[in-house]
Length: 364
Image (cartoon, rainbow, N blue to C red; front, top):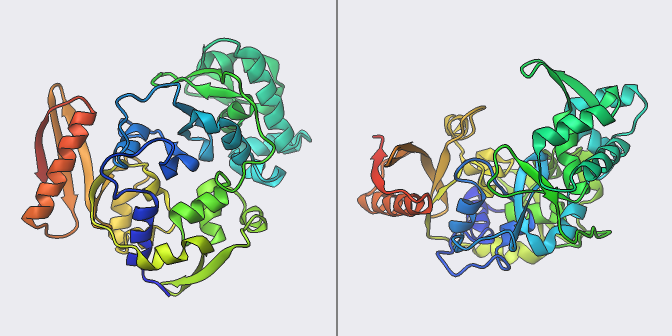
């Protein structure tokens, strides 16, 4: 039996959020499951707050792929074969759940979801022989594939491929997203070779338990957008059950001692889509229901202020010309020392953004 504070402290340690510097891509654990690259404070900032020097990060080191939930995630380039194997749907039903509304017309036409992803991937591979803008790839695919693959987009007044099959087929086709391109540019992964199985390190169920555990099969399934049945079928044998606030969850047996002994001391400004905030037991991170709504709104997520293993508020950047301010909304009264630590992290963020910090606005 453990309490939520132990769980949160364990995750801080497992995700190396207590590491100030000296981290390398090779020893940064979150790159095993993928670092979501959404917004200006995306993957690079997530690595920076884990002690990685991202100033020299290059295409030779990392690869950006559409993977979990169709979102862009950063990985080590050396791991790309295992990653692509790891993010494959577990079954045809799983593929159908991950592609959302695109599954219905395919089913009506008698086309399997996995077969459809294979067909889309083959078309994308044919089209992308050189770096190609996403819209051009989609437009050409729309002329190659039959009606069940297509939808009419009213805002564009045009017919497109359904979005999720397009995104989830890209890695299967051996395609990556070129870093820092908007709109996205797709290109072939040089020397791409898919492996037959990802191995334990990149297995997504194990990685979730290692980095976001203890967890239930439903929480892992929600993270992956996969059916609970498929996750249960792949549940590791080497787990121990623990009780967290009355709920039975699982943790890899090798991590049991780390869970019971974790203590942390660090202040971090986490980006809105940091892995730490992707856990599906949100009440564990923020027990107050009002704080859950504030931290995970439907649109326009803020970042989280993490102090000594607890989320104690939210933050938002405000940039106008050369002015860069960080607005902090605390959930409790902050000591002078905590304010100073948050300000130091805001300075770090400003430097990361190549800006000069003008102010840290603490709402009282």
